Structure formats: C-alpha cells, structure tokens
Image 1 (cartoon, rainbow over the protein chains, first blue to last red):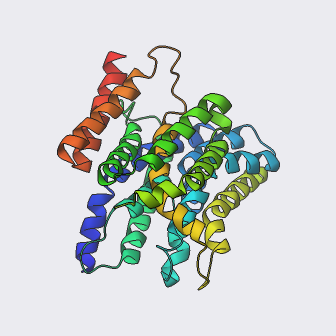
Image 2: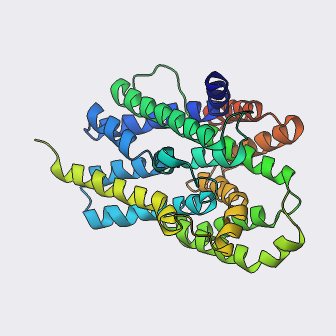
Length: 230
Length: 108
C-alpha cells in the first residue's frame, strides 16, 4: 500500500519536480548573487515554502526593505492562499496530526494536485495529500539549495523551463473544463483576473481579482444550482 | 557581520505567508458545520482558481512589446490542444514546455 501510494504520488508530482528544481534553482542563484549563502536558501525553502514569496523576499533583502513593506508586499503576493484554504476546509477535515503540515505546504502546485487527483485505491485522501505535499517540499528545498551552491555555472541554457508550471495549470484547467458542463466558474476566474491585471497592474491585481471572483461566484450561485457540477 | 535585519525580513515574510495559508482553517474549524456559502465557494473555487493561476503565470509577460506574448500564448495553445486530444498530463506538460523553450531560445 505504502509503495503504491509513493509510486502514484511520484508520478503525479513529476511536473512539479521539474518546475521546482529549476524555479528553486533560479531563486537560489538570485539569493547567492545578493550575498546570501546556503543556510539562508535552505531555511527559507524549509520554513517559507512559497515560490513567488521567496523571489519577492530576495528583492526585499537586497533593498533592505522595512518590515512593514515586507508584510504588505508579501500579503499582496500570497493572499491567493486564502482561497486554497477555503476550498479545502472540508477535504482536510479530520486529517489529524498530518493537517498542520498539509496546510503549511499549500503552494499553488500542491493545491492543484490535491484538488484534481484521486488517491490510488485503498489509500486515504489525507495520506495522498500529505505525501504530495511532502514530496513537493523536498523538491523545492533541493532546487533552492542546489541553485544557491552551483550558482550560474550550469553549461546548458534552461531558459524557458519555468513554463512547466504554467503548463501544469493549463492542463488542470483543460481537465476541469472537459469534466464539467458548467463553465461559468472557470470563465469568471480567467476574465476577472485578466481584467484586474489590466486595470491594476501586475503588482496589485491579485487581491482585486480574488474579490471579484468571490463576488461573481456568490452572485451566480443560482445558476450553479440549475446546472450542477459533475 | 550577520544580517539581523535580513533575518527579520524572512521572519515577517514567513509569518505573513503562513497566515494566508492557515487563516481559513482557523476561522472555520472544529466540528461546527461549515457555513453553506463557504461550502459552495469551496466547491466552485477550484475551477475559478485554475483560471486565475493561468493568468497569474502571464502577469509579467509584456503583450504590448515584441514578441507580444506570442511564445506564451502558443505554448499554452499547444498544451491545451494536446491535452484535449490525448488527455495525458505528463505528455501535454512535457511537450508544451520543450516547445516553449525552443521558441524563447531559438525563435524569438
């Protein structure tokens, strides 16, 4: 059973492995260039475990930002996690001792995998989610530390490899689109975010997008009753 | 000299990040029944969030300057078409990523 779980979880997290190794390495390199060594890379990956949050932290470190601006900027970037929690409250109920760690490790990628994939037969959803979270965390730590140690010495160009995570989200999006008759939530997600990005710019669009999504989903609740989700 | 202020920056950034992850679970905890509207949002949010994340990945793409986001849009199109056709996640993601890398390294 354990072996089966690990096998399925490794397969499901393969795109995240690729993405995190390179994205983590990118972070490690940047951190190194700002004068922060392996200890910083390791502990940031271990305790923060947030891709865009850590990239932001590098620029905050480099500019000796104040603690207030650190808090505000991090909130602007990571507020999207609030939505992940809201949609997993019932799924993660009763996960016991595993629960705090599963919440701690709710990155974009972990969230996509745990909401989309089914655990293998005979394995509880909680064990599956926990294993996926832990694997993603290990990948991320490896990426950050390796990047920090190796610096920019890699011989081949990996430019563009970060697209693997975009591709992961596109795949999930298509998968959900094909599995559902009601496309309204998906459309609301894309349109609100695109519109807010144009209106507010890349620094501030996330919170207005989330507000718009929550509002529109609430307003259109009646349609959801008429056209149930599969 | 050890960068104490830097350490505080990391501490604050970590605490804020964790707050965004733990807050919903702290608010709606225990055996209390989750409010209807939250149950409903929990059910539909994943569909909206995936759309949000796809756009989020494009946030730093400059659509008004060359190459006008063409590699990103083509890359997404390849992933989507391949996925509708084969329904194999690793294949769609793998081919799409290599295609995108070729585009940004050799074409654009």
